[in-house]
Amino acid sequence: MKLVVGLGNPEAKYNFTRHNTGFLALDFYFKVHGLEWGVKPRFGAIFGRSGDVIFIKPQDFYNLSGQAVREYMRYYKISISDILVICDDFNLEFGKIRYRSGGSAGGNNGLKSIISELGTSDFARLRMGTGNDELRKQMGDVDFVLSKFTSEEKAALPEILRALTERIDEEIGG
Image 1 (cartoon, rainbow, N blue to C red):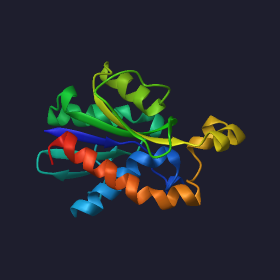
Image 2 (image 1 turned 180 degrees about the vertical axis):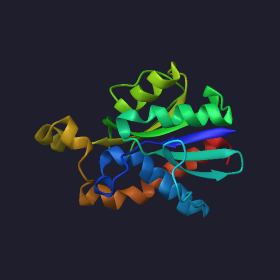
Image 3 (image 1 turned 120 degrees about the vertical axis):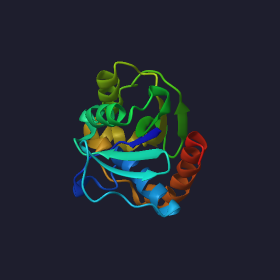
């Protein structure tokens, strides 16, 4: 059993914000693969399943994402080595995708929450770059991560999300 976690914030006002990259990536993945999300949240997350892979979008807000991850791991007896987390990273150039098999949270509060709840940072993560230094300097970090993508960035998202979908498939053996 594998667990793929997309990080984001649950309210509609956060759709297409930088911090909702994980949700966006999994929604795109589901569309490409003809999958459907469950109707009701379970263990604090919207979930879907394809074979032996469970996909979740935690609904406790970004900074508390670790709670849902912990609950799914416990219930399904998922090993830490079978977790893949998808999140944003404003320190990466927009659209760049970086895979790591473990490591620090790098300032990402969703990853910090997961590390805290699981007691380890030895899980895989795919980070999508959302960096835009000029805009970030104007807004500050908190407002920047909660800001919507620019029209130019939005136009580039389908290609980036296709690349993320391919990478997810590589990582889960899809």
